[in-house]
Image 1 (tube, rainbow, N blue to C red):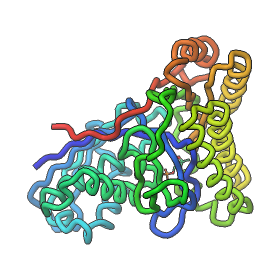
Image 2 (cartoon, rainbow, N blue to C red):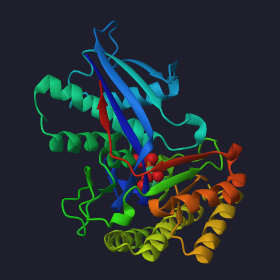
Image 3 (cartoon, rainbow, N blue to C red):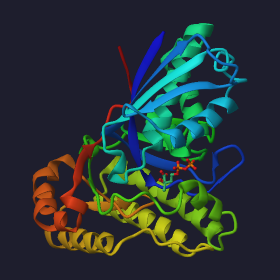
Image 4 (tube, rainbow, N blue to C red):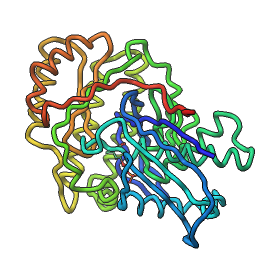
Length: 344
Ligand code: DP6
């Protein structure tokens, strides 16, 4: 039996930063599901050859990867009560990304969601449960979350919300849902061009970053701000209020980095070129009135967000004014995507 899933990455517009309990978020986040950046993962079950509890044969991009394999073994071991077949079979897992691993793009969201979907597909075959898409995807989002919080949001098309909030009906801390807000046609095929400022691995893992929020002097205010911004952003998506959209998305990104800079220990993940790009985006927006803004992950790369109708002008601007700040002039052109798909 072999199962293969393709699952996308996502970029948070309202950030998840700070968690408690078993991978539960301290505030609700909202993300854009991407189309091009994805992971393809296949899982096959074979007869066990050893007495090892979790017998994993893992390859990433065709090669052994002991560091990833060790993490995956731990994760799979933590799920063996939920999936009793995990330690009764040899697990042959193959995974690959559409983007270079060294591009400095977070891959845990696409990787963990693809894995969760493979696990759920086998579970569905073994138990006959989860035959409807809704319960299948909800449970996949739950397991993706246990692997990496942001992965919970990769299961659905367009915009996704993870974390319980009174402003989004049906939202939960345990799994993400597709945002029920009717977003304005302006946001269809929303563009995300990822400017690779550095391809270095992150100096601080997001796990460690989340932990630093526990004693952060600004934590309470941060969660309050995130709640307000989620409301503002949902309103902007409904009415195509681009000023509010750009302001909210940029403030979220800068607040994420401000929290990192002011945590103990402090860390700075932006590079000088990150700031150079940000300044130029703001100048371009102010002088052209084209709605283009930026967001950042926990790293120096810049996601340039803009509507489909401004694609030509913004891409010209990226080519002529921003590429010089990128590592080897690397940009990945992405956009809103449809969520995961099963491959045969
Ligand atoms: C800055 O999902 O990578 O990208 O749950 O520890 O795996 P873990 O963290 P992770 O954190 C993502 C942080 C972020 C913001 C976001 O995606 O919402």
